[in-house]
Image 1 (cartoon, rainbow, N blue to C red):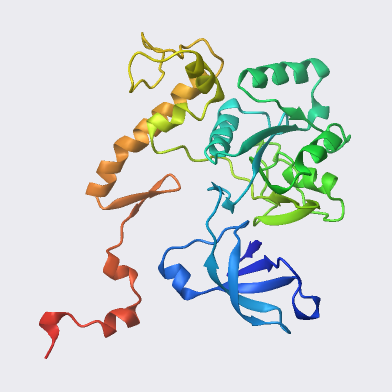
Image 2 (cartoon, rainbow, N blue to C red):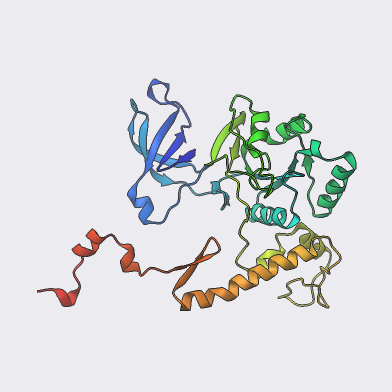
Length: 328
């Protein structure tokens, strides 16, 4: 399924009358009232089908096995974090935040590094060894030269949904074009001054890669959110999980900051990055009571006013509602 503006393109399990395989659907109002969000990858029930026009309405959403919150993709079986080795330069903190987002889904996480042709073999090996110490087996590829593409295709050509996510300009669309040349997705160069990519993918869409295997491209963004619970953060780092399998911290509420009695310690590459993320989460937690007291909510890193529930209702609906003390 693909989301486009106010419509959803739904792929049918089996063709309908006239060989229809896809329906353009709207969402039933009752789903919106219950707060049910429809995501790419959802399995849905449709009703009110107009077969000649290939249109219908989504009536229900099936329970999900997993959910990647940003980009919103349901029922994915693996998340492929894509980063560029150069142009734009690889940022360890930004990459860490993307990996944390992927780890929160609870599904398999793959790490793909693009534009390998821009680095020497020695530089490639240094990055490979460093990221292996993080707990990942990075695959270095080059869409330009074709290096690593066959291996990547084999990894993704298994039943399920694979989601590509990463910053703008790292070559996600170029990678899909190399894997599926018939798509000819639009690509764009990286800004030379800011070393940032331009957004060329505007919405999430599923592409068939092999029998039962679907590939999801997603819009790039540069600052993934962090978990709201400081205790959850540590378990999203493979290095911390590995060390806690061998030993136990002295205190149950240990946040693994390298204090005495901590089994994790501080002698690992991403310890400084972990502390930076932990500080951000703790600041976010500390802000929440103040935001609620001030009648504010946090959205996208900005503080916005909380609207009274009555003001959220449409004016027409409010006019129909008569307060008890206003009755004649």
